[in-house]
Length: 100
Image (cartoon, rainbow, N blue to C red; front, top):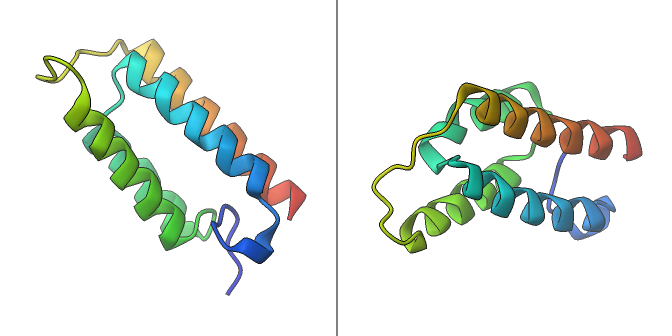
């Protein structure tokens, strides 16, 4: 089956994957955690906008960033930063769908 944002080699979203990795770093800096990201990723997967493999990749990567964050006892995040981070992710997902 076809998904919007996918990690498949033949999918042609190699540059998007790089953009996603950069997004993860900036989202983490703002206070996004794997737990805070899970509901939106679940919705993307359920809607077919993101493949299960990509969801697992992002969740595991964010969880790893959660682990390595120094003094990581749940940095607070402003609602504006949270929404902006999700908006940036959504833009990347839409770019990958438009280019597929």
